[in-house]
Amino acid sequence: QVQLVESGGGLVQAGDSLRLSCAASGLTFSGYNMAWFRQAPGKEREFVAGISWRDERLYGDSVKDRCTISRDNAKGTVYLQMNIMQSADTAVYYCASDLSFRNNRLNPVAFSFWGQGTQVTVSS
Figure 1 (cartoon, one colour):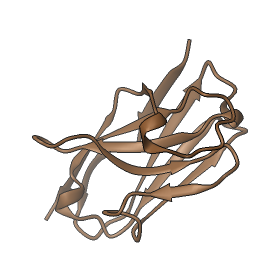
Figure 2 (cartoon, rainbow, N blue to C red):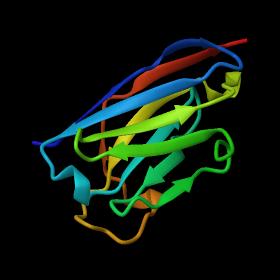
Figure 3 (cartoon, rainbow, N blue to C red):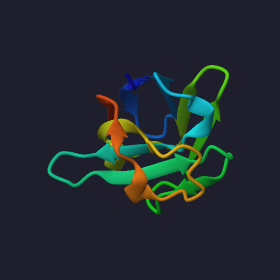
Figure 4 (cartoon, rainbow, N blue to C red):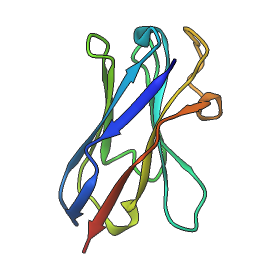
């Protein structure tokens, strides 16, 4: 049974940095593309960043200059480091997995399994 558990959310001040973690279990983590999405109140879910099983990275336009996605295959964990947080970053952040093993295409639409999400609130 695949499980994705996010952590690291909370209340931060504008300008602060934040690192989110997502611990995966129930899958051979090193062989799957992983991603972070977010959903702000009243808005659609938005792609934030993705990392392939081959360590390629893809970022959404709204965050690409301020965040870094990384993975630790030994720990089965994917991270999202966000810097210079802004009020517009307030959202529930979701970890997601592409369930196609060793998918060579890093594509936001391919992510089909989700964690429960972690709330990030940026106070100005």
